[in-house]
Image (cartoon, rainbow, N blue to C red; front, side, top):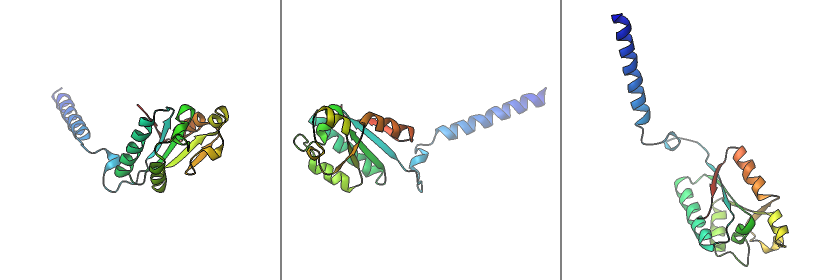
Length: 151
């Protein structure tokens, strides 16, 4: 009986020490030195709010400052298509600079059709996807992290 109690006390102490060590880490494993994890993020923008476009630009630059090799896509659809419209975007220079850093911007062709816009109405830095929502879901199914842009 004493041996069983001693064994149980020893096992409990070992599990406690392992638990304390496991939860005491201050740096997540994905941020440790030498980590080669690829961060893939898909941002969805659906708002016509130009302040949200500026905020998104800052957020993208913040992410790239921390993870310079991150793969990032911005999917603009519905009222968020204004982000990529030549006549409505208030951040074309920022989009050009972010594109140069590897950020991909895509416009929803279904939204263009609904709003009677042409591909030539969209900034040249942008690509196109047939359906923005479908593209976002497919990216999530591929393991990309989803972020809703805007406020």
